[in-house]
Image 1 (cartoon, rainbow, N blue to C red):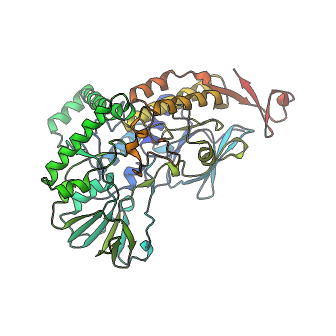
Image 2: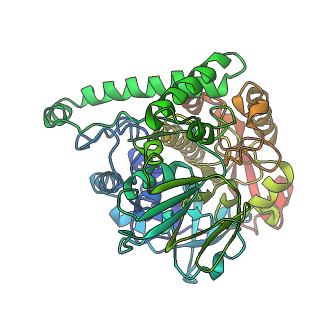
Image 3: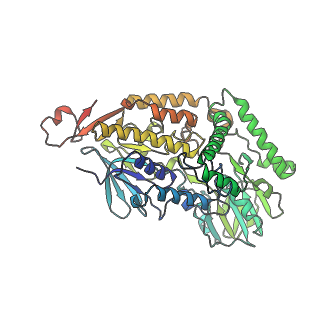
Length: 518
């Protein structure tokens, strides 16, 4: 049985675009890229809220092999990230491989033929030999479970589902959430609204955002000599790795790095709020730096010094028809409710059921046996499948660095399967378990097991207290391992016709027959 495509990439954000480019560069042409949205870009296509921008420099937030000399700022706005996605798709000839408005609702592995059967929302289905799941993290908005939310008579909008026609000028706005989205939204709308009430459950560690316009002379230099932009990227990547990543994953060895980061953030807070002790106390996190995702901000803390902006730290009791009532009995009337409450992350991975051999569902496997992967990429018992963003894949450094090494991992195995003329590649359970044990051992050194992380409500953690959202390794180490892991950590097999006379002697799984290849 021949599949519709050799490889299916699910997701057309930067992870999926990176996987598709990798396939083309490897000479693998029989692939398609599926996405539920009507255009490419993933989160950058869906999110259009005021102030949306990348929160690390554009030098690092781009493919290492495709520097983009047209950024107008060091931290470009969302529109420029969408333009970069379009640029990559056009340059690498991917448009004919895209299938948009194609929402995957289910995937099931056909053990007899070593194929993934992928069902779409429109009732159609596709088969593929290999699947690369590039669905990302920030795709399913999370709404708070607050009594009365459905009875509010004003306008409700989530930052991930922003209506560009929404007019806020002169209106009373309540904003729930103080994460990365709020850090960008608040300073952009504070001067436009009549009143802004920001409801904070957990404050955020914040650092000054060194954003500046990119001079035209610099952009001309980048276009004329791309190596100069790659050099800048090397510097920004290295700074990130030596500061945040090392501090986070080697906290036990270098605890002073976290304390230094916290001190820097407190100094920045003081400079923004003018020494207002009460406000500083409310905005200072009570957990260790790194337990939750920190951010870079410009104007967020200063916005709370405006007369029309109020920080509310009392717990929300319920939402009324006309406003928000807090536990102290106060009720604040609002016209618009903005939910900057983030996304379902680990509980949305993957965002559709995936059934492996024997019918076992991947989420069920992770729920019962913990989130786990081999090298952050594949999962035992689920052949011919790799994740770009899965448990223990992201190092906390460069998102694009993660894409690079995850694509490298998947392509090495796919090319090896082709070389052996195999139709199935499955990570060996003992190799998978060894990799997971190493991950758990290394996690003991991270900030995540520090007592200061308790009660942070961070999407880094799962219900067991593990932190599978972050791989305890530097980006450089993860990239090296992707290039050098032993390809024999996978078992390779070739499917055979069901009527082959020697099939039963060579192996039979649920009626399917195969030859093991060494």
